[in-house]
Length: 520
Ligand code: NOJ
View 1: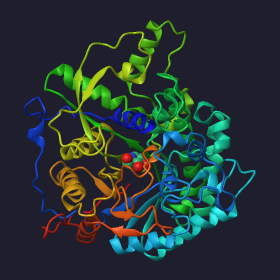
View 2 (view 1 turned 45 degrees about the horizontal axis):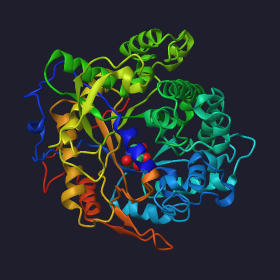
View 3 (view 1 turned 180 degrees about the vertical axis):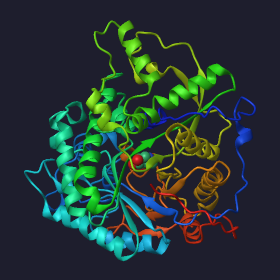
C-alpha cells in the first residue's frame, strides 16, 4: 500500500552536528534519553500554537467552485493508495466548521494558529484568470475569527496541494510554476496582508520535492530518482526568493510581516565519535535540511552537496550535473530570504560512514551515502520511522543556530506524536512526548542560549494523515470520522498542552524567568 512509500519518504529526512559537541559513548545513544523535565518557564512572548494543513482538515474539496488539487486527483483516481474512503473529501469538515476550530483553539489558550491556504480554493485553476471570492472569504473569515480571539494567524501558502491545473503543466518540474506561485502569493499579500504578519511560503520542500518528484510517496508521486527532487527544489527555491523579494519591495513597509520557509528533518546524530561518523552525519544534515536552509541563508546549496552531486554526475557520464546551478543573480536574490527560521521535527536517526554508494546508484540517498538508522532499543510508535528521541530536538536547534544563526529567531513549526488516533488517555504517550521534547527545547534556550521563539504542536485535531488516512494520527482532539459533524473530543494531551501554554511551564510549578524571545 502507498502509505508504506510515504513513510519511507519521510524517514529520509535529516539534519547535523556542531563541532563543539560532546558525544558521550558511541552506540545506541540511549544514555542521552532522560525523563527529567525542566522547571524553567519558557521566555516571555513565546509563541504557542497548533499547526494544520488545508487538505488535512478542510474537506469541501469542490465546495463553492474550489479547483481540484493534486491530492483530490489522487483520492479520486487512485483510491487504492488510501485506506478505504479515508481521504480529504470531507476530512474534519473544517471548511464548514472554522468557528468550532477557533473555539477549540481559544479554549486551549494558544496565541498562534498555523494553517495553510489551499491554492486551488482561491485560484481554482492556479492562475489569476479565475479568482474564487468564496475561497477568499473563507480564509478572511477564519483570520478575523482568530484575531478576535487574540490568536495570531501564521499562514502557510503551500502545504503540498498544487492545483491540478498547474500540475498538468508539469508542476515543480516546469519553471513556469515560479510565476504562477508569485501571482498567487501576491494575491494573498494584497488580500490578507493587513492581518497576517507571519507567512510561510513552502512547507517541507524536501517532502514536496523528494516525495513528489523523486522517490515517491507524496502527490503527485512521480518517480524520477536522483533528478526530479533537485529540479523541483531548484524551481521551488527560486519561487520562494521571488516572493520574498516582492514582499520586501512592495508590501513589507506597510504590512510589517515576516516570511520564512519550513524545513524538515530527521536529525542525524553521529553514530560514534569517530571523525568519519561525525563527517557523515554532518553531510547528511547539510544535504537534507541544508538543501533548503543553505540557499535561503547563504544564497546557494551547501558546498559538499554541490561537490558530491557534480562529481557523481560526471562519473555517471552525464554532461551536466543532476544538481541545477543558481546564476549569480539568483544567488543574490536568494541570500537572506528569511525573517525567521522554521523547522518541523518529529524523530532522529544515527548517521554512520559507509562505503560510497555504487556509481550506478542515481538517487538522493546515493548522493548522500550515509548509513542512517535507528537502533532497535529506541522507543517505538505506530509508525516505523518514528521513534521518540527528545534529545534530538535540542541537538537539532543547537545545530541550526550554529550553522545558520538564530538572531532572527528559530521556530518549531511542527512537533507531535503518531498513534492510531483513538487513544484518549494519551497523557503518558503523546503528553509525555510533548513534555520531553519541550523540556529539551527549553534546555536549548537556557543551557545553550538558543533563541527559540515558538512551538506549534501538530495537531489540534486528528486529521487526514495523507495516504495513511486516519490510520495514523497526532491530534489533541479525537475526531469522529463516522459522524456527520465530525465530532471533536479532547484527549488528555489537550488538557496537558493547555496547561503548558497557559502557564509557560511543563511541570506543576516553574521558576519564573525574565528572558524574552528576540525577534529580528
Ligand atoms: C509533516 C507534514 O507537514 C504534515 O502535513 C504531517 O501531517 C506531519 N508531518 C505529521 O506526520
